[in-house]
Length: 358
Image 1 (cartoon, rainbow, N blue to C red):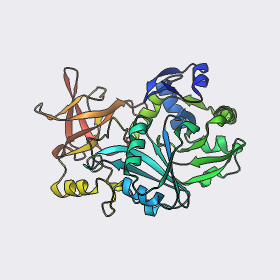
Image 2 (cartoon, rainbow, N blue to C red):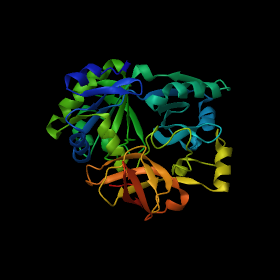
Image 3 (cartoon, one colour):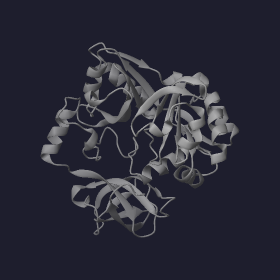
Image 4 (tube, helix red, strand yellow):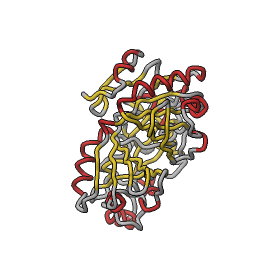
């Protein structure tokens, strides 16, 4: 079991720790709903140091990334970020990731912890042009400081104007007395805020400074359980649940980060799929009748015929009703469509809706 640099800090705070993607990670502290609302209304902090970080540098970096990524890497500029995917030859999603351009010929790919080893193997297997790649995962800690009070509470720790960092932009600067911290605005909670990438040796120093600066703002440590409910309320995909190597970006509604006019691995398969038409799509739904949808539950039509399955589901802390995502046959994917979730032995009515839920 791998440990982040802040593992003992989480235990000292009374976090419930469980295995996640090969790491012992904090799942919750004071409770999922409490932490969820802290992020929606105030400020919460997630240790997401289990995520992987690959650095691509040199004159071949852009060429390799353009081949690996569904988005158009040539559109990136220094201090900008993109959401993108790595695909296999069949168009299945190996991983979804954030790609940052730090400077000219200098990129940072942030990948999912559960995909780290296979991603590293994949990018090296495809690197037949001699691009320089370095796995910086073990040397890097990452904190996500999220919520409407994140910027105001943290401004005292840096001379960087945090409010000037636009969505999917970054700044490299000093934070809490630590140099060369990457400050990015690419949060996955939908409540604003930013992420910090820094040398692992500075983990406790930055963590302590963050909580000291945030104490008058009601800052809370948050675990992965509330991170999951927060991302689901915004309709964001979770790798391993909503997307995997058996799903394509087109099926998952990620066509907006899939530039079929570029040549990336899997592009031909996606062009063929688009031409032939999708057989299934990832949809969002709200429960009409009382019930909490869970991953793996069957989705059926009015006659009880199975038309898909739930990939993510929960009781929304904001809406106080069941929400979820899942794949269904294309005929049932239109907003407003009536579907049913098989919850144990009951068939419970739901409706296809647009995201975000909140």
